Amino acid sequence: MYEILTNAAARQADQRAIAGGIPGWELMERAGRAVAHRAAECAPKGQRVAVVCGPGNNGGDGFVAARILDEEGYRVALYLLGPVEALRGDAAWAAGQWKGKVNPLAALDLTSAALVIDALFGTGLSRDLDGDAAAAIVAINAAKTHTKLHVVSADIPSGIDGDSGAVRGVAIMADETVTFARRKPGHLLLPGRLNCGTVTVAAIGISDEIITGLALPYAVNAPGVWLRAYRRPEAAGNKYGRGHAVAVSGGLAATGAARLAARAALRVGAGLVTVASPPAALAVNAAHLTAIMVRSVDGPDGLKALLGDARFNALVIGPGAGVGEATRGLIAVASEAGRALVVDADGLTSFAGDGPGGLPALSALVRANAAPTILTPHEGEFSRLFKNIPEIIEAPSKLLRAVAAAQHSGAVVVLKGADTVIAAPDGRAFINDNGTPWLATAGTGDVLAGFITGLLAQGMPGHEAAAAGVWLHGAAARALGPGLIAEDLPEALPGVLKRLLEHGGR
Ligand SMILES: NC(=O)C1=CN([C@@H]2O[C@H](COP(=O)(O)OP(=O)(O)OC[C@H]3O[C@@H](n4cnc5c(N)ncnc54)[C@H](OP(=O)(O)O)[C@@H]3O)[C@@H](O)[C@H]2O)[C@@H](O)CC1
Ligand SMILES: Nc1ncnc2c1ncn2[C@@H]1O[C@H](COP(=O)(O)OP(=O)(O)O)[C@@H](O)[C@H]1O
Ligand SMILES: [K+]
Image (cartoon, rainbow, N blue to C red):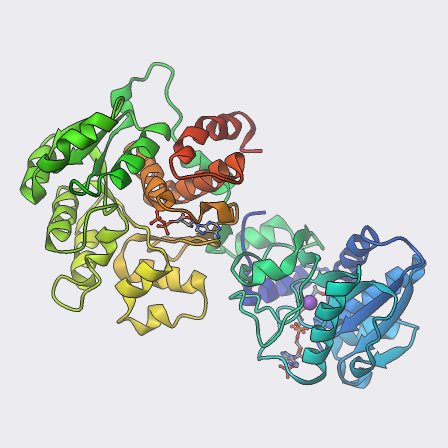
C-alpha cells in the first residue's frame, strides 16, 4: 500500500481494472459506497447530508454516495455543478440511479446539515476554481468553522491538485478523505495534506497486480520500502563490521553540529564514529565526547591523510563547516576517496555560487564517486544550490523538484520540510509523512544528517539509507513529543529501533 498514484497513473489503474473485466460503473459504485460508509461512521442516521457533485466522474462517486446514504436513512440533498444532461459515461449512469432531486450548486444550503460529501473534483481538476464551485467551497469551509459540520471528500479535497498538493484557487478543508486504490501525491505534499483530514484508502477492485504492473516510481516513506535493506547486527558480528562514520567538525565556535551528527550516527548503529576536528577545536570536541572518538584533521590535506585508512567509510560534511573553498575542498577529498558522503548545511551552500566552484563542480564530484552521495537541503539551501536550473526550480511540485535535482546532480536528494521528499537519481522518490512540527528547532537537521551517515556506514544503499534516516528521525520526534530538542533525538532512537525491528515500527 506504499505506492503513490499520480493523477495519470490513477487513470491508468482504472483503465487496466476495466480492461481486466470490472466495468467502470462498478468501480464507481465501489468508490461511492466506500465514501458513503466512511461518512456514515461520522454522523448518525436521520441527519441532513449535503452532497456536492462536479461534472466528471468524481461527481459520479457523489451520486452513488448520495443514493446509499439515502437508502441508509439519511436526509440527503444533492447539488450538481452544471446540468445533469452534460454528465457522461459512468457519471451519467450514477446520476441515472439517483431518484432524488438534483439541485443547482448555486442553491447549496448547509442549514442544519451534519455532513457534506465533497465530490466536486478529483484527479481531473485541470485549472483554478472560480464561479459556483469556488463559492460552494468557501461556504462549506466557512460553515465548518462555526458548526459541527463534518466534511468527507471523495478521492481528494476538491481544489487540491492531486499531483502537487497545490490549492487551485480555493480548496475544501476535509475531516476525512476516502481515496481509491492508493494515495496520490496531493495527500502527502503540503499544503494538500493539511486539507485532507484523515485519509482512508478504499480498495475498489484495483488489484495489487495492476499496481505492480504500473511500476510506479513514487511511494510513501515507510519501513516497508527500505527495511529489507537495513542491516541488522549479526549474532557473531563485531563493531568493525558495522562501519566507521566520520563527522567533520567546524572551527572552534561551531563544533556542536558535528557532534550532534556524530551522536546520531552512533545511535543508529555505526560500529565506530569519529569527529574529525580542526586542531584549534580539538580540545573543545574532546571535552564533549566519550564513546565517540576525536581526531585532529587539518583541512583537506588532513582529511586526505585520515582517509588513507579505508575503514573510515562514510562521512558527513557541512554542519557548522562554514561556507567556502575550505569546505568545498573537504567534500572533494571525501568524494575522490570514494566514500559514502552526506553533504548538508554549509556544505551545500559552499557550492551555491555561480563560479567554477558551483553546482557543476558538486555534480562532477558526485558522479565520479562510486559510493553514494546524499544532499540534505532545506528549501532555502535547495533554492540557493539549484537556482540556475529552471527545470528544477520551476518543476510543478516539491516531488518533481526533488526528482529533477537528483537526476541533475546524480545524488540522492533529501528535500526537507514537513513533507520531506527523498529522491534518487534513477527517478524514484519517497514522500515522508511521519514528521512533527516539533522538529522545527535548531540542530535537528544535523541529527538527520548523522542518522543517514550512520546507516551508510553500515552499508545501506544511498536511497534507502536516506529514507530510513528521515523516517527514524520522524519516529524519534513522535516518540518524544512536545518540547523535543535536537539532542533528544538520538537518545529516543533505541525505543524506535526496538519497535521497528520487533514489530515493524508499529
Ligand atoms: N472509471 C474511473 O475512471 C473511476 C474514477 N473515479 C473517480 O473519478 C474521478 C476522476 O474523474 P474525472 O477524470 O472525470 O475527473 P473529475 O475530477 O471528476 O473532474 C473532471 C471534470 O471537472 C471539470 N473541471 C476540471 N477542473 C475544473 C475547474 N477548475 N472548474 C470547473 N470544472 C473543472 C472537467 O471539465 P473540463 O476540464 O473537461 O472542461 C471535467 O468535467 C476520480 O477522482 C475518482 O473520484 C472513481 O469513480 C473510480 C472509477
Ligand atoms: N513542520 C515540520 N514538520 C515536520 N518536520 C519538520 C518541520 N519543520 C522542520 N522539520 C524537519 O526538521 C529538520 C530541520 O532541519 P534544518 O532545517 O536543516 O535545521 P537545522 O539546520 O537547524 O538543523 C528537517 O529534517 C525537517 O524536515
Ligand atoms: K473531491
